[in-house]
Amino acid sequence: MAKAIMLQGTGSDVGKTVLVAGLCRAARNRGLKVRPFKPQNMSNNAAVADIPGNNNHGGGEIGRAQWLQAIACGVAPSVHMNPVLLKPQTDVGAQVIVQGKMFGEARARDYQALKGRLMDAVLDSWGKVGEGADLVIVEGAGSPAEINLRSRDIANMGFATRADVPVVLVGDIDRGGVIASVAGTHLILPEEDRRMIVGYLINKFRGDVSLFDDGLKAIEKFTGWRCFGVVPWLKAAARLPSEDSVVLERLASGEARALKVAVPVLGRIANFDDLDPLKAEPQVEVVFVPPGKKLPADAGLVVIPGSKSTIGDLLKFRENGWDRDLAAHRKRGGHVVGICGGFQMLGRTVRDPDGIEGSVIEAEGLGLLDIETTMEPEKTVRNVSARSVPFDLPLEGYEIHLGRTTGPDTVRPSAIINGIEDGAISADGKVIGTYMHGLFGADAFRGKFLESLGIKGGGIDYRAEVERALDEVAAELENHLDCDAIFALAR
Image (spheres, rainbow, N blue to C red):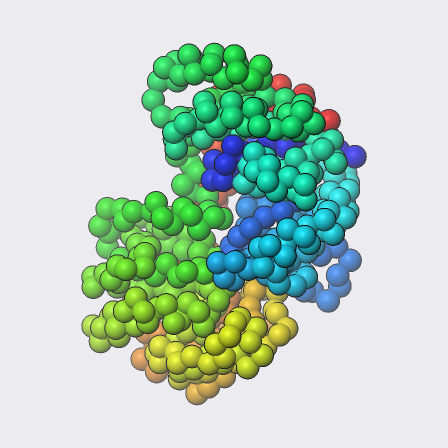
């Protein structure tokens, strides 16, 4: 087995994903063969990864974070990097993906009972991820201090103790109370779990780090743990794809630019990193619009993103009055792009006769495309190479969706995927729908698309920007953490 080290947080959203990605890149820069691993993830931002031995060209789903971490390692993503993925569909239930494939659906209480059965899959994937690697860097989920869930835990100490992986605890100073969160974790962990922790680090520090010297002494007094360093606020992290939709609550509109892109924040928004390449463009301002706020009247483009619950989000779309805002946007001559679930919403009707998404089996669409969608049990999961029909340019992306869409506007497809027409375009060309995630990541296409909206000079090398951001994060970690000590403690 490869050596391994695990990062666990004192809570959710402490920055573990970026830290693991940065450490993966730092280890790779040292010449190590490194892999990421996250036993259990909860996110509707999924990526398509290889399923070893699957020769039908289909893929499996993993969290977008592990896809990014695989890029940091310089390797292809595998379903074994994230063996259990939970995709929330309601406030109390989620779709359960195991080793890339649909396992079933479970309410939160039922899932706690199910987790014991999933540990075998986690340990099976764990053995496979380490094959041929020098180092595996593991990301926990939530916090090990959730001791009420410890008996069936597969994401934090339940995994660490079974796999004998030493743990570095991450505290987030930006949210406040970091001394209490680290010391409190030490206090309430059972001894078996506490001894897995080899030290801690502090993340997201702003200002003069010497001002926290007394804080570090206090943590050492309470815990006896060593500190591996204090990481400053990583500005480069903003240029990396975000996985957790909690970040959308903090995104504010930037400075006014030539093109404003409005994105309604759906309740079950999925794969919103589709917008990242547009955010990276210097002349584009992407505004995520929360429920209760109107779509801005000065937006030139509205993008309706993916959704894990198309009908439910469509009903909420109307409740928010966004349907009226969108109709006014169209009347002003504005452009609209719908991706995956957003594409389905743009049609006349969405039907779910088998109740796959819930109890509502039919909903009226937004009526901007003359199409209708019927949900079907079989899910399409695959990476694709395609070609834009309106711009005759190559596209790279992936599909993760349920449903089949038909109707008159599909005679004007937005893309050709593996020789098959995909999506639909309105007669005036201003409303575009597609099932393909990642289309804005194609630099040449994005440049031409923006040019069609009157924006010149688009088409930066987005993938190169992600690589540079990973290198910058790794360099910051090398400067502010004792990476030698962290890697040396891996076992």
